[in-house]
Image 1 (cartoon, rainbow, N blue to C red):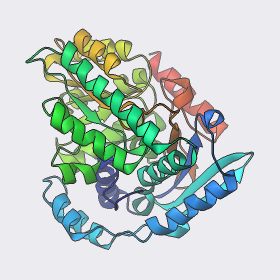
Image 2: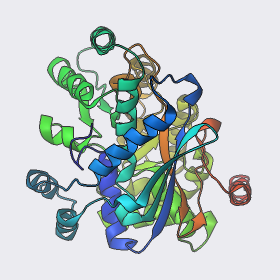
Image 3: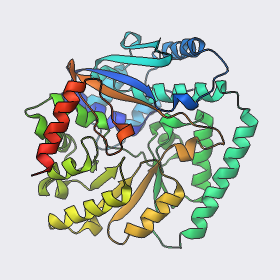
Length: 397
């Protein structure tokens, strides 16, 4: 169900290098959440489903990076030799992940050194998603037929509404929500054959290598969350995270994720130095139109021409939504679109909405405070209240 340790989001590897160089001793805990569990249907008991996940975890923890994968990663200029050599030795540790059932729901606890657990997230989510596809009772021939029809309709739509010469670009962000590995591969091959000028890349490192397309990704929420406990002050955690990233990549990988503490707080931290240094920002929650207007206004305030910066949209997109945003903003800022479930799990049945998020760093709580209420995550109410107070006080100034 996953084809090696490279069958993961590229940003897991880019963050992993920073962790190796700057936070190798850090200890973390992640938790799993199935956002739409009430809409799901399994042809087996939840306990049997959990047991199958455990079997797949056993297999996952036998994987090692293969020599051709190592050579591919070594060819990427910003991956450093010591990180590549560390990957030669790397193997996921089975003792760091545990599944269980609580209050009628599936729970997954991942706890251990950040450096040794960071790769679990995407791989585990891809396995759960594919197991669900197999055990949901939906005939594979039927959903693949429907998926192919929808896929063809999507490309026809793009070809119809995007004029020749227009720079509409999108990337596949669908590994963690894909119906199956083989379906994601079929989708990507279809886009490569039908609209290679519009597919800018994929977040999946394995498919980027296999299909010779660009790997896409920089940082995830966990990177900013970790810095909530790395100090020196909670109010400055995003500034510290951005500086840490800049210290590691020196201008490479310049798209900053903007919503871990809400976009208004991010813009306060994203001062002229960071606004000049980073190529742009990624939107992953809230109203995308308001977000883009605020980002452009922020660049104006920083005396920066927004036409030379990039806005990446990646929150629950369809091509219809992406085209609308492109038409609204492409003359004012460069736009690109990271699209997940709509590409890799839009086949006529309800796709799982599953996430794994960091909830502790060095045995202290961390939080994601999203611009969409249902996308936040924290298990410590006192810490969350205090964090929200810090955000409110900073954003009202």
